Every structure is written in C-alpha cells, then in structure tokens.
Image (cartoon, rainbow, N blue to C red; front, side, top):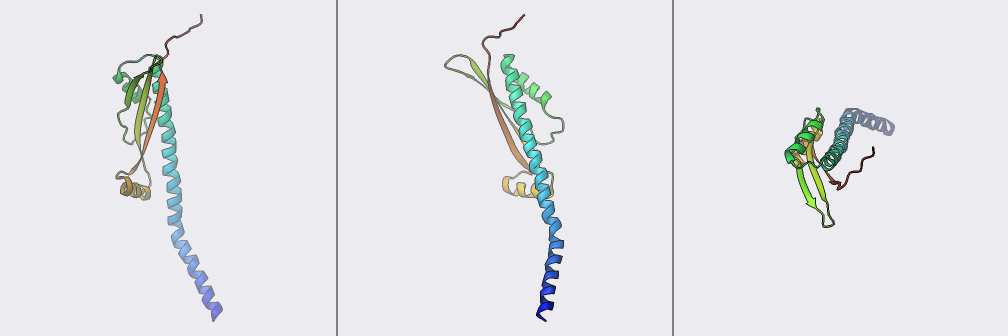
Length: 146
C-alpha cells in the first residue's frame, strides 16, 4: 500500500512538471531574447554616441542640428523603440581646447508578453531604457602628410 502511494506521488510530480515546464522554458527563453536584444542595442547605442562625438569633434561641427541629423542618418533602421533627442554639450577646458559631449537615449522594446507586462508594472513602459555618453576633444592642430 505504501509503495502504491509513492508511485502515485511520483506520477503526480511528473505530470506537474510536464504542465509547468513549458511556462518556465518560455520565461527563460523570452528573457534571453529580450535582454539579449537590449544588450545588443546598448552596444549599438554606445557605438553611435562614440562615432557621432568623434565625427563632430574632428570636423569642428558647431550646429546641434547637424549633429542630430548625423545621428538620425546613422541610427539603425530596424529600431522601433522611442529614440530621444540627443543631449549635446560643449565644454571649454581650462587647459585649452573644447570637448564635445553627446548623450543619447533609446527605449529598447521587450518582445515577449511576460517581460512586457513585468516591465510595464515596474517602470511604466514595456521597454528597457538605455543611455550612452561619449566625449571627444576637438583637435587643435591637424597634421597631414603629403
């Protein structure tokens, strides 16, 4: 009799596992997808900030609209999330020279419903907020070789 009860408990545990395992698997795989894309978007955003700051510093770009247009032209076309206006600042150094700082923000969307709901409940938006900052000093002298 005791043996029969143990077999039933084992069978019950296997059935419970079979019912719940797909949900756990979806949560884990969904997390890998959502946070993998967010990490990739963070790297892309940082590269975009670096490239923009370097371009603006080396070409002595003075207009913020030119910088915003450059960022818009280099932004990946498949980005569907909210892309905020960049923060652009020029800082004059006490040692001489000027540093240009570019700060950009992007809302990387969550793709799985579980994480969309979780992010909406915790942060108010179904996306992961990303930001990147890059600074470059404008060169004072450019040496070219003939």
